[in-house]
Length: 176
Image: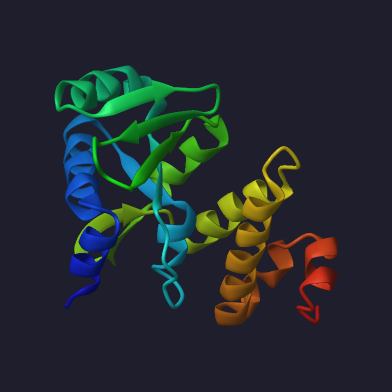
C-alpha cells in the first residue's frame, strides 16, 4: 500500500480532498504548502491530519467561492481560512498571515504523498515553524509539535540551527 493510499484511508478521503484543493489553487494563483506536511518533504515523515497552505492573499475570496461551489465547507477566521470536505478527517488551513506571502516566489516543487506539490523552500518552512513555535497564543501541545519539527529539521540540516532563538537552542540541546 502506498503512502497516498494509507493517507486516503486514515483521513477518510483526505488525499482526494487534498488534490481537489490543490487543483483549485493551481487554477487561481500561486500557493505553497507549509506546516507539518511541508516539513515531511525535508525529513522523515510523521503523520498529520493537517494541510497548511499559503495562497496569494488577493485571490483568497475567489478561492473561497470556488471551493464552496465544489461542496467544501469554508470558514473564515481572523488568521485562517479553514476548508473541510464533508466526511473527511483532513483539516486544510490557508494562513492569512501576510508574512507568509513572501514564501510564494521561493517555493519549490516536491513530492507529497505521491503528488507534485508546490512547497515552501526549506528556509521558509523553518521560518514558518519558528513563527508558530514563538506564538504564545497557540496551544502548548501545538507549540511542542512545532518544537519537535524544528528539532527534526535541525538534526537533518545543522546549518539552519543559527536561525533558532537561543532559548530553543538550549531547550532542545542543539549544542550551538
